[in-house]
Length: 466
Image 1: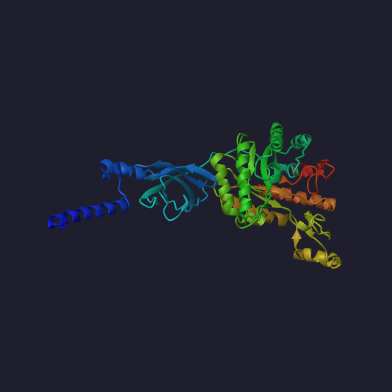
Image 2: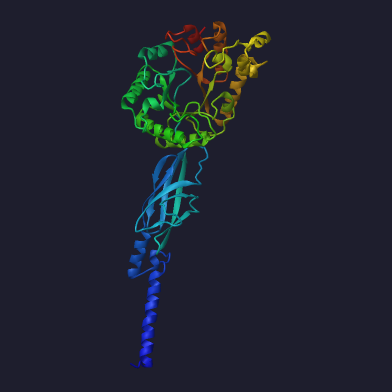
């Protein structure tokens, strides 16, 4: 059959139109605003832009829900933080719930680490479903606030050592009454993960209720309480994620348990004796977590290393009116821990720990432990110089200071032990440092022994009574 020229031209026009239509169907939609489209195109554009169901930003282990504005293609997050500690907002995890087959462009996951910038420079995120690409702007409105100053009294106290540091809590309410009777104003209440939490992180209800009972008993007799997260199952070393996960879980649940207690009566200590170079960043995040739920709670923070030297060099968290720098002091360790942690050689206080003759008589094992103390003099002046450096640094930061643990082994000569307590308490007062004795009436370091009877001579020294 012969095809005329006119018929050929018609066929070509039809084929050309078909190709153009097919190409248009394959092309991605233009990233235009709703106002740039009309009729059915507007409806299709609106459908493609509406790809986000929700957006959640996670900061310091708590979530902030964003406001999604489909029409203007933006997500807004409002965040409040407390204190003057610099907040690292460069990389924050944001989770988008997407629909219609869209994913974050460049990854198969909806979870990304997003760089958040000031409001005049929003972060931009592109979503794609293979046929279309939609860009959203992400804004962060950050407000730095100052919490009201809390009046939490703590000057002279004792630790309720071991009461919640075993699998089965044990305690004696009469001891709480005696601590108040003698004139102490607070207690530090240590507890371990294994005492309060199951292996899956859930609360052991009976043990947690007993902790509440102790706190309520202390408050009823006029004692303020420092809740001390003393030891983690994963250990207090911050090189591994397990310790961080455990600490976050514990405090999320402890905040839920104790946030209703008056801030004037109960304070938190984030972690006892932390060590490892990841600790300072971890502690900042934990502080922001606590502040999110309890802006006015007094929080005791510890430098990595937790001794007087590290407290004297502490440089973070300046300016928060409800923060307290806490450290521990047992110097000289050979004397304070005599016959408890390996060393059984001679030690004396004040002065040099051992004479030349005593050094020559030591075993090789004892010399290996003691050689770093040759010629060092331990006395009031030594202790005062340590505490003065801590106090000067705390004053520079505008923070209060606290010695959360100190003590001296009962294995020492009694008069030397009493003199150590006199010197350390005098140095505390000269440097305006609050203090909490390790152990109460029972143990190796405190104002008593394992028989549980109070040592009133040491108690009088601790309370500065003649």
